[in-house]
Amino acid sequence: MAPPDTRRTPLADKIARLIRTTGPITVADYFDLCLSDPEHGYYRTRDPFGQAGDFITAPEITQLFGEMIGLFLVDIWRRQGLRRPVRLVEIGPGRGTLMRDVLRVVVKLAPEMTSALTVHLVETSAPLTEAQRSTLAASGTSCEWHATIDEVPQGYTLLVANEFFDALPVHQFVKALGAFRERVVALDDEDALTFIPGPATADPALLPADADAQPDGTIFEIAPAREAVMRAIAGRMATNGGAAVIVDYGHLVTGYGDTLQAVKGHRFDDPLAHPGEADLTSHVDFEALACAARTAGAHVAALMAQGDFLVSLGLLERAGRFGAGKSEAEQEAIRVAVERIAGVGAGNMGELFKVMVVTGRSDTSPAARTD
Ligand code: SAH
Image 1 (cartoon, rainbow, N blue to C red):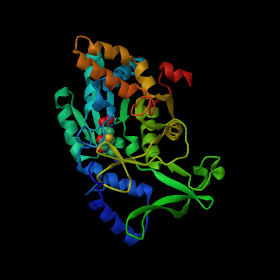
Image 2 (image 1 turned 135 degrees about the horizontal axis):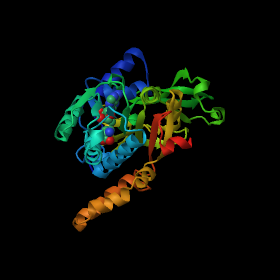
Image 3 (image 1 turned 90 degrees about the vertical axis):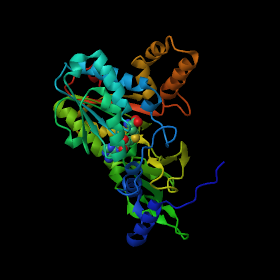
Image 4 (image 1 turned 120 degrees about the vertical axis):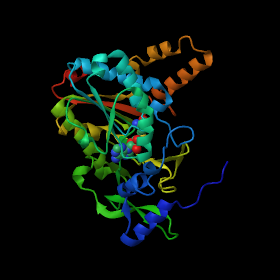
């Protein structure tokens, strides 16, 4: 095994200088610097996906993932009354693979929807925008890029976001001496980055009802940046109609725990070890997102495990047809990929990942009538 990489990254030096000058920084500010520092931020400098990268996402594992999302969007467009024009929006599109697979299905199954479409990609990373351009060049659909969701023209909207919300900063509060204090990144005696409880205490209104009963050391996370994007999406749904499919790893119910995680070279890393060179994320609190969506006037039409969502859309049947006539090795590869995106247990995404569907209040869909 290679010896541990103990080098200090250029961003770690920059953060250490910042802390020396102005004091410890919140976990949310640290998170934001790690991913978005203009000079050294993780997403500003690299394409992180694939075998040679740091992690792999469902659309990069198999085209079946994007095809299922495409099927779902065609279906919901029909149920919502064949609205025109359609803004097809993706936030955080990575390499553009999911949008490519969605478009292939839409073009094949619904020419009448295809002719009503404009495609909008919301992305902040220059290297990934280039990757998306080249992936989507052959799609035959013209695409526009935007820095934020608010720049996407109004109108009936079908939106997808896969592993986007986990990349937006989270604040952590740690219980110390009886109060939940904002966790900050400071420098220890050896000048290394370290987490400590900061002076600010959490507004009790932000904490769960049983916060007083929690022992010292308990961590609670909140993500106003995620809720703000959710409100913007939900506001669009409420005003213009449409559906948003949000997919990410996380929990259905708000809870306690430290879910901050760094991943580098397909392994978990210490979140403070390689700022700017490791992906930094945390689990998504879907209860908080659902609450933000409802507050903005939208309807949470579905919230379930990714495996259940994909299987209910016919993933297994589609995988069978996709494998028919292929070699045994190819069929095995499809089986492994399906297990990875929809299976349960360690290493699989089916249970850990959740899917939330948000629609406008008046939009009709069978799911929308049940809540
Ligand atoms: N959806 C893709 C990529 C997930 S990685 C997939 O499933 O493969 C997260 C994506 O969100 C990247 O494309 C990253 O550049 C983008 N991103 C991160 N922060 C963003 C922000 N604030 N606004 C828009 N995109 C952002």
